[in-house]
Image 1 (cartoon, rainbow, N blue to C red):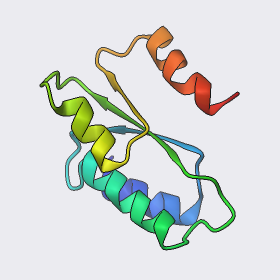
Image 2: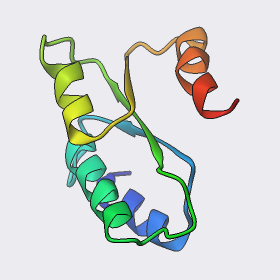
Image 3: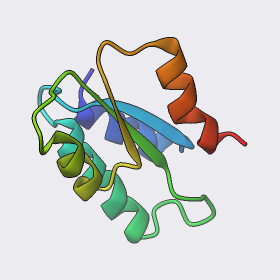
Image 4: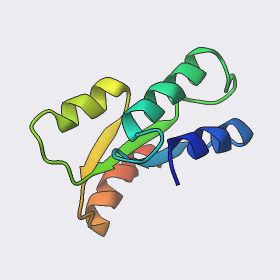
Length: 95
């Protein structure tokens, strides 16, 4: 849906990994990530580890990956997403 919906769902139920499109309506992936990190910093998920956030985008501009990481994402993958790329990205989060 959009970043606002994701934030509401996270407030109801914590998820260890979030995969978010960078360019979503209402609240984009960058803003959503900043909000998630703010919730974590405020102690909203006190007994949980940091949520692993993966940004997904077709935007190949030079600063896109840097901007994703600066917003607090743990990694970014580029569209079209291949199953092997997704697996390689998620593998470290599920040892």
